[in-house]
Amino acid sequence: MKTVAVLTGATGGLGKAFLQELLQEELDEIWAVARDPRKLEALCAAFGEKVVPVRCDLCVSSEVEGFVALLKAKTPDIRFLINNAGLARMGPIETFSADEISKTVEVNCKLPTLICQYALPYMNRGARILNIASAAAFQPNPYIALHSATKAYLRSYSRSMQYELRAKGITCTAVCPGWIDTTMLQRSRNGQRIRFPGMVSPEKVARKAMKDAKKGKDMSVCTLFVKQEHLWSKLMPQKWSMAIWGHAVRKYAEDQNSLPAK
Ligand SMILES: NC(=O)c1ccc[n+]([C@@H]2O[C@H](COP(=O)([O-])OP(=O)(O)OC[C@H]3O[C@@H](n4cnc5c(N)ncnc54)[C@H](OP(=O)(O)O)[C@@H]3O)[C@@H](O)[C@H]2O)c1
Image (tube, rainbow, N blue to C red; front, side, top):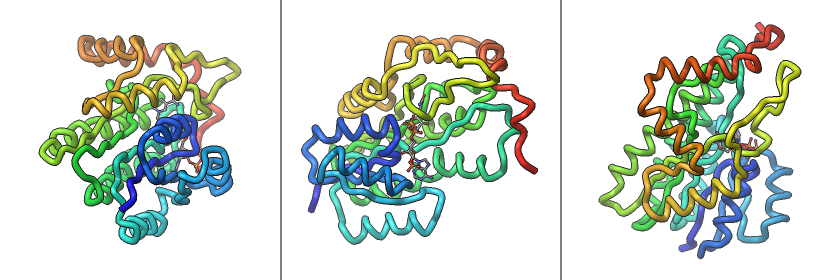
């Protein structure tokens, strides 16, 4: 039976950083899950033969069924499951189409939950689940409301999983990074360069997350800056923190030209 890591969103900025971490583990294969076949091909060329491309659009149920069939056929010993694929966009809530809302909820909430469920029968004592949530999960954040709410779900679900899985010796870590320097972030809006206070490299987030997961922590918070945000979210009334956040990002987010197509 092969020892395997399953990594979704492997072709993205944080995904590649996790891939580098996983390559240092004693694993037979790393299953890299993503949609774009060209990016997957480039990933395998860059990271070597341990990386097994698994093309799967997490929003297409037949493709997810294909992933489940792969599990049944290969019966791997999954040592790491990293639910990293995610979607985010800044903007007023009325600019989100029904399709964008559905896809964001599916990729950020439904699929990580289902993939955990599908993978658990193939996980044994000492196996690690890492669910990539966000510091946006600490409080409601106007103008990234959908992202923030979906990550709050994932953080909450992951922490409950960690509790329930203790007896099996499997850990589940909710990874809650602040801004990460990847292409997910839109760099300017309304003609203004967007500032991302405390932004860090994906490598730093992945390294800390793997370290925390191996310690069996239920949450991974990288950098003092984000730890402070976490503390404030517990001490400050949420109405105040939302008002501070809303005031800071309103100038980027409110855009009359970005209303959705009817
Ligand atoms: N960047 C930040 O500031 C930040 C902060 C906090 C948390 N996070 C979280 O960190 C994680 C990684 O983010 P990132 O910055 O690395 O984003 P990214 O560079 O945009 O990468 C996103 C990844 O998700 C995959 N993906 C998206 N939709 C998918 C779908 N329907 N099916 C399969 N794969 C799909 C993409 O694959 P394809 O390219 O093949 O579509 C890509 O590999 C996300 O969960 C994000 O919410 C990011």
